Length: 500
Image 1 (cartoon, rainbow, N blue to C red):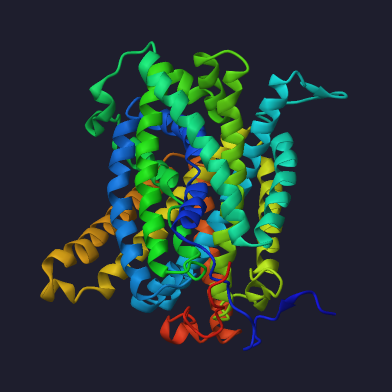
Image 2 (tube, rainbow, N blue to C red):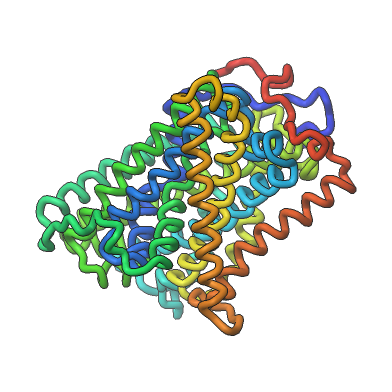
C-alpha cells in the first residue's frame, strides 16, 4: 500500500524542499523561542530565583548565547545541515558526543512540547474563565490543573502537528501572523507598563552582583539560557532555505530581538508588579499583569497573545525536532521512519507525526506533578541543563574546527575560537554547579518539583538514555556515522530545487 512516503533507506528518496527565506527562518526561530511565553511565564519563574534582578540575568545570559550563535553561524556557513550540532560536534569532537547533542535536543524538545501543551491549555482555560465559563457539568475548570490543561493542550498539539506535516512554508506563514499579533500586544502593554507603572525604576535591577547567592546566579543563568533557547531552530531548516546564509541571518536576528523583548518585559513587569506578585502567579503571570494595567476586554489581549505564542511555539517545536531526527535517521543513528519524506508535502511527515505522539505521551506522564506551576519549574530546570550541555559542545566544536585561525587571523579567531570556548566553559561550569547543588539540597528522592534529586534525575535520564541509543546505533544498526562523525551531505543531489 502506498502511503505517500518513501522509505528512509531508499537511495532515490526525495529530499527536503527549498522554499524558505530570511523572514520565514525568523518566524520559525522566533516562534520556537516564544518570547511572549517566556516573558509571561519564564520571568516569574526566574524572579523566584534571582529576585528583582531580571534585566541583569537576561543581559548576563545573552553574552554566552551570543557567542554560541556566532559559532552556529560560522559552522553553518561551512557545513549547512539539518542536524547542525549533531553533525558539527560529531565531526570535530566525537561521534558519541555528536549523537548526544542530537539526542538531548530531541528529548529536550519533546519535554518542551509537553510543557507548552499544558501552558496552551492553561491559557485557553483562563480565556474561558474570562468569558464566564467556569464549569462544564460538575467539573470546575482550573487553569492551574495539570490534568485539565494537558487534556485541552493535546488537542491543540494534534492540530499544529498536522499543519506542520503539510509543509514548513505553510507553518512559517501561520507563525508570522501569530508573531505580528503577539509582538504588537507585547510591545503595547510593556511600553504602557514602563510609562505608567506605580513601582519605582531601580538601576539595581541591572546589577548581577546583587543576586542573592552563587546558586541563585547559576540557576538564574540557566533559566535565562532556556528563555533564549530556540534561536537555533533557524539552522534546523537550513536545508529548506533557498540560501544557507539566510538561516544564519535569521538566527542572529531572532536572538537580538529576543534580548530586546526580554529586557523590555522584565523592566515593565517590575514597574507594575512586586517581586512576590511576579514570582507567585506562575502560568497566570501575564494575565495578572494585563489585569493590573487595563480593564476588560483589553486586559484579555495579553492572554490571547500568550495563547498564540504557545500555539506557535508548539508548531515551531515540532518542526526543528522532526528535522533533527530526519538528519540522524538518514545516517542510520535513528530508525528509518524518521527520514521518510512525503511525496506530496516534501516534509518528514511520519517523523513529524511521531514527535507529536511522543510529546503527548510525555505530557500524560507529567500528570504525576498535579500543579502546573510545579511542572513548569521541573521541566525548565531539566531542559535548561541539557540545553546548556548541547550549546557548550557545539561551541567547543567550533573552537576545535577553526583553531587554525589562532595562527593566521587573530581577529577572526577571537570570534570563532576564543569566545565560543569561553562560553562553553561557562555553560558547562554552570550546569555542573547547578547539578551539584541539586544533589546536595536533598537527602532522599521524591516526585516533587522542589526535590533536588528529582530535579537532577530528569536531565541525567535525558543524557544517559542517549548513550544507550547511541550504542544500539553503533553496534546493531552499524551506522557509518560512528566511524567519522560526518553526517549525510546536505547538498547532495537528493535535495529538491528551489520551489514556491
